[in-house]
Amino acid sequence: MWKWLHPYAKPERAYQLCVTLQPYFLWPGILCLVAGSIWGLAFAPQDYQQGDSFRIIYIHVPSAILSMSTYVAMAVAALVGTVWQWRTAFMAMIAMAPIGAVVTFIALFTGAAWGKPMWGTWWVWDARLTSELILLFLYLGVIALYGAFEDKQQAGKAAGVMALVGVVNVPIIHYSVEWWNTLHQGATISKFDKPSIAPEMLWPLLIALVGLALFIAAVTVMRMKNEIIRREYHRPWVKDLAARALGGDHAV
Amino acid sequence: MNPRRQKRLVAVGGIGLLIVGAITLMLFALTDNIDLFYTPSEIVEGKEGVKPTVGQRLRIGGMVVPGTVSRDSESLAVSFNLIDTGPQVTVRYAGILPDLFREGQGIVATGVLLESGVIEAEEVLAKHDEEYMPPELAEKMKGIKHVNPNQGNTGS
Image (cartoon, each protein chain N blue to C red):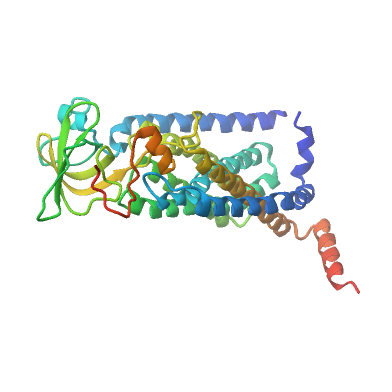
């Protein structure tokens, strides 16, 4: 059933796939991100309680949702790498880790900036905020562990185990606001019920969410390309690629 | 799937299940400590049989009971009652309230239990719900008049 996937375990095929996918992720991603942000920040109506301050939702919520999604994607890559021993899967994992860390940081930072005027505090040790902070530490742990090994195959295995163990934190983040009483409010859109947000405020949020998801995918394939080249630079196909690129530049 | 891969998959799955089990038990045991605050009924009636003692530092979270907010005209001192489903608890506070503070709003206050049902707060935080809507819709649906957070919040 999954036989068609097997060729992509080879770095050369994975590289070509990345090259093909990149424009489809990058430009629609930037477009949606810009459109969603402008619509949300400038044209969506004010909130009845929070006035204009609620607009930070258009950055906070997409980055918070995608910090978790990116972690799950990274853990799936780690699982494939661990069980099927695909080297490219570990490359995908480490390509995603710094992106996820940055997105998590953005979620925490915008959350703090939102919390100060609305709740009255930058930070409170409630379950949602604390578990999201742990997510940031997990990303940093994966990056640090990967960097600690000289042999990158070994590094991928070690960091992969850490990524897999950390996935238990993702449902904790999501359900923290239901399981415990927290200062953070419950879920607005990531639930099975009807979203608790007016449609004219919801649309820009969804567009920003899709935009950030595509943008993260685009940066992932870019970083993955770099990682493949870095690990395979002594291989003939990379040399061919380099020769062709140089030839293209210097063609008369 | 070849046997080696199958073995690895089983190992990864098994270890994963063990970790999930361990974390679940841990969180279950720690439930009371992870909760950010007591509700007013937990302060008056006790939480799982344990009543907070007088002088204990704690956090309380509840709704501001409409009509109970009284401000001192000379200072920043303010007192109000909090409620969830049962009894009310009075909170006294001297300081600046958050912008979202108004009657009917969810509030989390940190302070010391003075006597049964009275808390001297040193920090008051506002909690808001997960609903976002334009002011016109809120007025139609909930009968709430929009109060711009930047202009006073007497919370009528």
